[in-house]
Length: 67
Picture 1 (tube, rainbow, N blue to C red):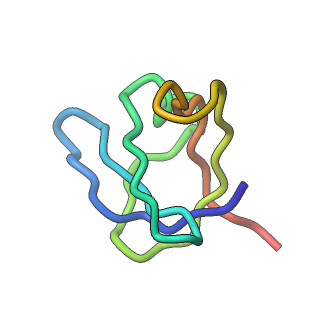
Picture 2 (tube, rainbow, N blue to C red):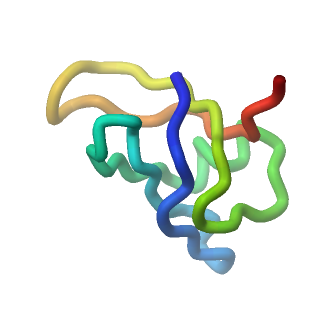
C-alpha cells in the first residue's frame, strides 16, 4: 500500500503517514526499522505494509516507494 509521510520524529524513529484517502495512520519504531530507512521527510511517498483491520490496523513496515 502507498502513503505519504506526514510526521516523523528522528529521536524515536516513529511518526505517521497519510493514506491516499487522507486517513492518518501512526507507525512505531519497529515498523520504521524494518524498512531500513535512516530518515524520513514530510511529503515523501512511502510504501507501507499493515496488519489488522479498522482501529486495530497497524503499520508493520515503512520504506520508500520505488518505481
